[in-house]
Length: 423
Image (tube, rainbow, N blue to C red; front, side, top):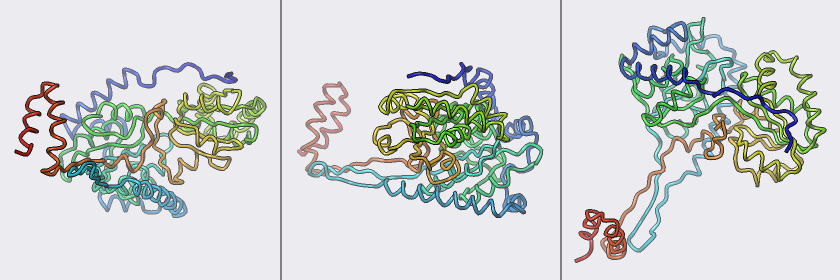
């Protein structure tokens, strides 16, 4: 393969300063509870409300006057994402099977009891974030979903449209807490009245401090995945529209200066045209300050010989978002293995996935797609196994397992099985 454009070397994504800061925040919240949360909220957000939990009155006041045209569009997104989650839920089934006479083995699907969802603020408060991390666990059957979102600096409130999304997606409790302190608060719980009780799992994207908090808290609670800066990889041949390819690359690049956009193509002519299209489109973007830096420093264009090599390189990159803009996208669907979410054909832009076409937009980055998929309804469900053994079946299974236990030297195991042998 040939690099027509190659990314510049980048420093480590998580510095020691971030690790140390997050560790201190987590330790303080575990020891001090709400007092530490309030201190860090004042420090990082510039304000901490009298009550961290939003009351119905607080919510109503914040939602007053929001744009109904926007909320109708959000409702559409919420409906699509929940419907896809419902389809996924139907594939997770209980079963039981008699594997030997008198031996019945089965599984049951049990939702996690309590989930904490972090709704990020940042450069762009993503309006579809709540349904991905609140609506989906509610479809899974999670009894209690807690939402945390930061106060918008200078406004003394969470983002009103994000709050609308939290309410419509089914959040049971909503707290005005941001950053690593929010993750720690959900993991350990807080005192006060009403108090925030600890959750079993925390999910959602955020900045480097939020991601590091999830990493450090894993084990205290479960997590969805460690999502870093967003990524897009486009596989394209000569049939692709260079203007659309350029627009899709820049669409992810505008997330921030650390977003990576990559094109792999079998067509040198397309590669050249895409570069020209990017040069034309960038000056027209209001977000060019971020998208331009991202493309210049992290953007890549890779030329390969054929479709097979395109698949091979794509699976090595294992991108968060993968677009296939080729003559035969189904050929790729049958062969590609490593990606967060796949967008097939010239009409399927990553932007649709980000904004709520149905699939979840919380996805693996940094090549984690080699071993995990994105957030889905299944992440919130525990597959629990069980077994039942009849009196008669003891005579069939016990001798084999006693032999194994005796060989291992686990005499108590062997004794527990011998006691069940028919006399």
